[in-house]
Image (cartoon, rainbow, N blue to C red; front, side, top):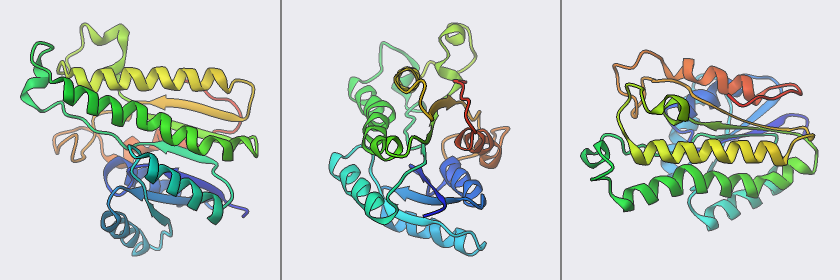
Length: 230
């Protein structure tokens, strides 16, 4: 097919939905919207269709080997390619009381957060990478946070949030390693912080909309030849 294929994980609402909506308005990109629950994804697809924005949908749970394998097979059979992968799906347990201190943080919560925000990204990226390598083209965008910046972590005004912060530190490391491994190819890997947004995770008091948070993701997903890690 002539159009590029863009997969956005966790894109039935919030930032992922905004990214899918903006990318789908690019003439040369076909967006695949994903969510763990089929009814959520179909509802999001219908909302976009009501705006005359056409996307495809397939269920995807990035924490499941079986789901990722099924999704990868479907993508390969349906399109034969993947050009863009936006790793947006993630969890943030920051508001749980025990996340206020390293003395009270629950190891199970930390493990679940790391599994979802780091290992799941590695899983879906690893699965779709051969489709990018086959055509020597790919744009991978990982949604991170400024809360994971090591140089400012000791003095910033954000909550301690150890599970979330450490998971995004891991995601940044994963991004840097993917970029290093793929250096010299036409597969560019970047991470960015969308800022504090008005989503279910960010709340209504956030200064930015999801549409504003999506703009950099769209920019990175459509980079020509030169990438950078933000």
